Image (cartoon, rainbow, N blue to C red):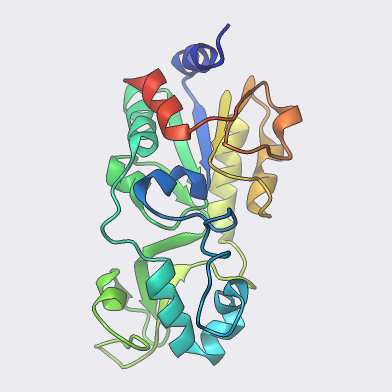
Amino acid sequence: METRQCLKEWLSESRNAVFFGGAGVSTESGIPDFRSENGIYRARNQYGADPEEILSHHFFLERPEVFYAYYRENLIYPEAQPNPAHKALAEWERRGNLAAVITQNIDGLHQKAGSRTVYELHGSVLRNTCMRCGKKYDVSIITETTGVPRCPACGGQIKPDVVLYEEGLDSALLTQSVEAIRKADLMIVGGTSLNVYPAAGLLTYFQGKHLVLVNRDRTPWDQEADLVLHENIGEVFQEITF
């Protein structure tokens, strides 16, 4: 059976599928990934530090001015819109085939496309919190200011609700994600190299019928999957959905 048709049939039979995705899901929306040839970790930067260091907890605390200069330029894309992959996932949920989206992305595009059950493992640039009083702010507190953003209420420093290097994932969110994967009858993984842990380790909890990988490049899990498509995720999802 042709691979796309096979995926379409498995999805149509599923009532509890789970999608696990990474940066490759949003590249078609104009948001670069991290580690590919054109990713933000490969691009030249003028900040005098490695991107992974800039996006670390200690760097955020010690050099917030540099952190925010890099963060505004490289991680926030307010004009980005959902692409065919995001829209297809929302439609699968609406039809009753997909139970949850688990994403490593921080752009909020799954919700913008209409997905309701979304577990954001690494947080979201759309949410921000004052480190002093706990007041919540949307992304405008970052995009409409310069330098280190401060809380209008108390003057405290604002922190994006994203998981930086050296920070742990939210334990409650991890538990919810693991539970969703354990219950899944179909697991579709897309747009991720599956090299970033602990997120990639979540796949070990899958006990369902079929594991499907949709990614342009090979992953460490290719040999474990029932179906592998080294193709454009938006094109594949659009064809089997609409």
